[in-house]
Image (cartoon, rainbow, N blue to C red):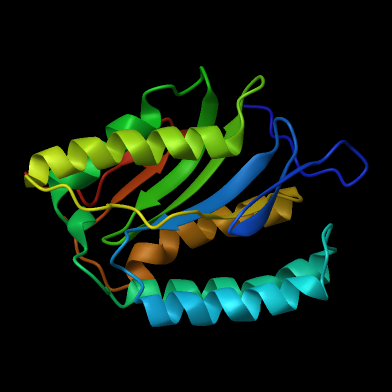
Length: 215
């Protein structure tokens, strides 16, 4: 796969849904989304308020230092909270995680190229690149919508499965890509997960590492 990195000199499309998102055709993204019950409303509101204030004084595009500051102030605290296992953690169940994996790979090499992803008990991290004119928000909408229907069917329930929105970062360089791959690969270990509690996919090795695949 030819990796396309963020180029601040190329055309950038902007859209806002709860948070501002930037898109550049064909760019590699690191994206995180999580289950609806994994963050209490009070925590969501606090993070959102702090983030909106920070963004007002740090408009995009960001340089590497500003991107690192954002990651330190918002991404790391959020992911540390999620790794503590808040909420129902439905994705610990192999049938639910497997259903999501199937949805995420359904249009592999057609609408997108997934490089790496990990399905954690209450959230997902993914590295992928959109193909042709497919947009990141439409791909996430399909992944979340179809998986929500299938997982709720498996569970015999109809609650909102996913929290609205997602966190995304465009990959800026080979070094940035390497750090994101390492983060995804190491996330289960940092969260003290055991075999049978997550699924890790890595296309670059042409195989699935399904330590979370329960027999």
